Length: 509
Figure (cartoon, rainbow, N blue to C red):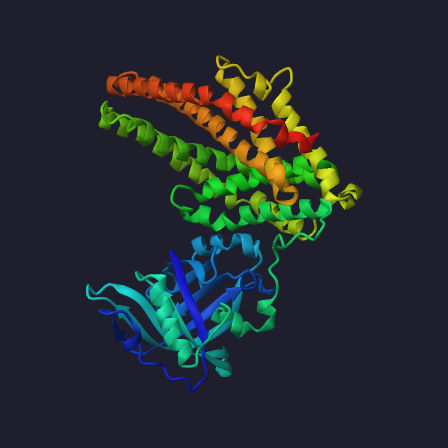
């Protein structure tokens, strides 16, 4: 689950203000009995978790004593996962969630924090819990000795909205509370070492003007960050947004990074990049099986519901879905096995090392504006011109086999990734081409998804020849998928003409 909270530093003699007058009508304050919570935080010897904004703790007094907190996209928002377990035995599920941060290093007690908490619930007339305010007096323990103390206020959003938290914040700050950075208790307890930079180097900002190597480094770090940030979310089966999944995002991270290493090949050392690309291909392949199953299950229900005036046999659709669900479960089990393997652990270590020190060639020192267009031109011309085995996009016939369209799609994806990687630096026409290629790729992606789905519906029917309802339903699904293919093929020439206009591509010459 996502936890959203705000923290405030207060002096030891701070008095919590009367909140009732600051809250909307109908919202009341419910004071809870004080509790004492003792938390033991686990970390590596060099505090890898704390420095990455991650925590793994056992807290006596909680119904579910073991908790992992992971960073999310917004400040003050974290993924929180709690499980039962004995104090000396952290659940294997939770230690696996921090794999991308611990990288196999031993986890041991690093800090003990005792908190005397006075909590207040904000509830509305329907008794919904809108927010919780925790007034925490914190002691950092060293054995039985108190090494340090501090006090802080936490305001955690529950079913309320951000406006309510703003009202609480105004009342607190008027009373002398200080809103500041979001520093977890254990980081304060561990001191400056826990507040150091994470092992995974973030992309950072480009200098002005950037060298080609500067752009490569930022692209590599972006890709690695995307992969590792989604590692725990894949393990949790967590959604990413309304209609996306962590499996998809982690797979895209692998593909984009492989593409960047290929596009920028002359700028990175081959002996360094090739093994990394090989291992990313392996991981993307494992994730791909699960992603394909996700897409097929979603497409089944979308295609089945495409024409409400001509509904399909709901029970037959459900039987097809059960087949896909079994495949999905098997694919996710394979993902779990891969993420728990020594091979994956070695890849994570390699990725962190790659972000820390990408190995570049001498050409990387040249200006980005001079070098990058020539490098991006290679995948672009392969897309436009094709070769003996793959049609160029402009020559792609509407009656060509699905395999030909798929081959162009692969080249289109490589070209799009390459243009995306430099669009932010070169701007202008490069950014316009990136947007146009995105539309082209969406059409080719829809074409491929429909083609794969049609083959899948046919194969499921063939595996169950005695189930006539499934056979009929599969046949109707196939017809709808072929209609989607025809629609994509009809729209492609116009989308390609817009993407390939001279004013968008002249910079690649």
